[in-house]
Image (tube, rainbow, N blue to C red; front, side, top):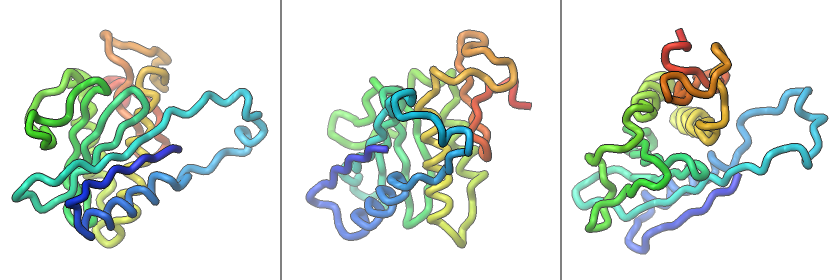
Length: 187
């Protein structure tokens, strides 16, 4: 996992603290390999797409930190944090602009990914991973879940086995196993 950080010069200690926390969590390998995977040689493993983490300048009057997570060449996710808690997320396509003309994070522009419902799934994941007494576990669990979307267009549905259903990839990720499902196949 490769993580790049960009800190604005005007960012204070609060932002640097969140950056360090997020960087540490992203750099950890939180999923252990199974015994079956241990025998696979490095030559056969596909090259992992890098995940980058960028911190844009804070919006004036906003009391949270916005963290931009780029998942390979698939998605860009704006993670809005208030203190140590993830407040909300906005998912955009890799080629979509996440900033307004004046350099602020665009919270209100629509995404071409709307039919994929990834932002809705991320909101549901935030509700699932709520554990107020252990925010570090919440951030680690959510970021691990979010990283499973790096294979959005490469993972077939675990129920029907298809890559596309009604022209859409399996966008739901199980919270425990991280397996991919089409929205209609997950129930």
